[in-house]
Image (cartoon, rainbow, N blue to C red; front, top):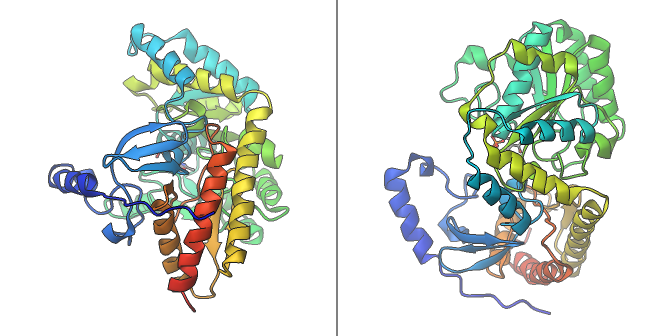
Length: 413
Ligand SMILES: Cc1ncc(COP(=O)(O)O)c(C=O)c1O
């Protein structure tokens, strides 16, 4: 079954982008979901009109099956009626009450019940808030400054990917280690362990941990008495209700949570060992919006839906069907590509033996998918959501057959 290529006008979005660039500084440089190096010819929409369930519609009226899902913050589907209903009810009672809400306490109780090892939790708004608080708590607890990290943790000074605007002394207090290199981390801790406040890492991004890697990280941290922080902003409530900790069977001392916790609403949390969390008495960590009712309401409504094993079996099986379908379609088209990543956060890697050709292939593939109504990110793994159907996945695989055929003719080694 071939999927018809649609005429994909982006005229309205392009005009809006021009207006945006004149007045909104956040549009300087890249815009929308594009990675640096991608441009207008890549057919990516920048502005959305609405998002509902598994789909988004751009301002030009093009509709896409959405595998970005708010960069993983949406797990049930966009505009989920139950979550929206809970938030609307909270709005009616006032969302900025100065005093604390009972829903904050019940959410903390819920995280303590649900998140492995969590004895206390603290709530914030963004993933960057949560990772920065975890680091601050560990520095206060260990009375050391050096942070060893791996992964993306947000935009704050200690971890921002780009150095501009950040004092060199601040950057020097954080060092990046290599994922799946247990020996390297062990050696680093042997050398500098006494100066280290914490090890903070995404438990997984695209490549799965090699057998024994996470265990070795845990053991090395234990050996030196260093807290291990899992940045589960992406994996929390996504891999399982207990996140990567329960999926991989490794306990962290603190976890950072956000994204899937509230199906796209702004709330984040740090949860973990009481001894470290009690440092909240000493560190600065407050914002008027941290106690907003909407985030707590959205989180409760989302977690209500994620309880029981069935939602996770579905999220994984939809992703598995996509990964299997992509593998079959690539092989039929004789394109060197293979699914990568955990099925619940699937991705695709081209393997021509030439990075430039692989990048061109990804670009061609994603553009061909967009023209067939499937929104994928070329440089960030994708996400399934509970609003997706088996038919949606079958449609994406059918589109991929055509997209791989385009890659086969455009990208020849
Ligand atoms: C693993 C991880 N940590 C932290 C962050 C930062 O979260 P935010 O963008 O909400 O500040 C992200 C965001 O993508 C993330 O994926």
